Length: 221
Image (cartoon, rainbow, N blue to C red):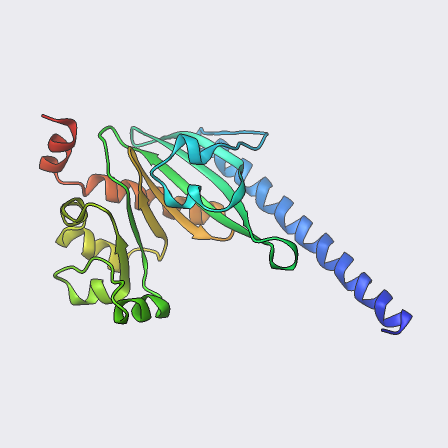
């Protein structure tokens, strides 16, 4: 590569890096302002160990160098909420990839069972053809659009009833996970304050859609 082309490449990389840094600082400032308006608290340090604190959440078990940053904690309609920028690393060398997610965790006052709900991808359909299908539901539209996994099918059917399916079909396209005592909403990439508002509301809607008899069963009543 000619020296001037190499210098131009370096200049472009530096400019791109500065732009990305400024955009991230702008987002953090917006998060702090939004956080104060909610009466919530934003931590000034990163936190690790999410896979230990939330062993039922599949996202937190993946990769290595797992870390949460820009962590916001508070209460929403009586439930604890934690919002964070989460990232982990897979691969090494030229194949090293950093995966980033915007995550909302809503605490439940009853035990839950691990369950994953996300939009269906092309390779999911290939897997179904090869016999590695997910859980199907009475709604053909829901089963076509969503990929659902859980070791406990009864729990999945109890939680994802008709009203839940109707809600998810209209809700923002975030992925959902139930852990052992929490509902987690996530997306790929970082969240803006507006996206976090959507995630918190979505988690609360799913919490409120949990049938009363299921809550009693899980509490052992």
